[in-house]
Image 1 (cartoon, rainbow, N blue to C red):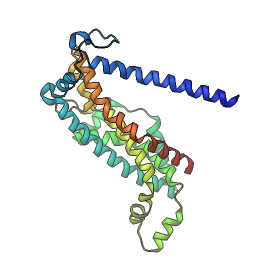
Image 2 (image 1 turned 90 degrees about the vertical axis):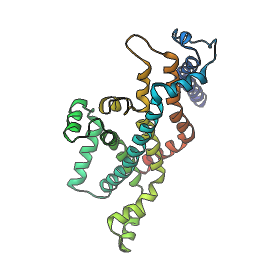
Image 3 (image 1 turned 135 degrees about the vertical axis):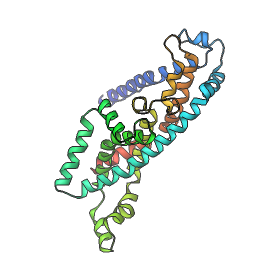
Amino acid sequence: MKNARGVVAGVVSIVVSAVFFLVPFAFILVTASKDRAEANLLEFSWPKNFVLFQNLSEAFVARDYLMVIAFINSLILTVASVTLLVFLSAMVAYVWQRRSGPLSGLINGLVLTGLIVPPAVVPTIWVLQGVGLFKTMPGLILIEVAYGLPFCILLFRAFIAGVPRELDEAALVDGANPVQIFFRVVFPVLRSVMVTVIILQTVFVYNDFQNPLYFLPGTQNATIQLTLLSFQSQFTTQYNLLFATILLVTIPPLVMFIFFNRKIVEGMAAGSVKG
């Protein structure tokens, strides 16, 4: 009886989740397939004139190839941010997990503070202006790294807790220094949780709308999410091109999640079990 209830509950949850995720995606798809006049009605109906590929092409080349510039900016931002996040969070987690003392307490307080305290936009802009990084790609990369570090550090620390200390000691006996121990012995073992961090942070940074809007304004600095604003104005909105752009923006993270969702679950589960 309990098993039957569990099956029913599982089926219901899957159906509800499918409705919440698939219905909005279907609405985006059908609206992106309509011409401008029909799309402006915002009705959930099959398009009378199927012009999806025409809308996608027009959205891609609109505003002097703004979409191309935005893709390049998002690629630079995502690759640089995720690379720094992986190395920095893994190193901090290793030191935090392996050593005890005042430094560990300080790291613990900083990590928890980063998870609890919400970001403050205005003071952050002041800091970026003070160091000359406001409205620059390096400044936004540092912002993305700072916001993602606490979560990534906790994931790596939970996994490193399951890595035997004997590996460190054996490498130390062989003459390796702490840097060599980390990069040659410990870091290669973190492959599974590393994949999880890379996938999660890639999707997060790629989909980030708020930080580029505040810290990297300007058309030439636009990321892929900010291109959605280019088809809206105070008086009119090109809904066919807007939804076509949403479709283009949605496809990369959707494909990544479909192919790597098992890796995400495995990495999260490995960290939780070994921590």
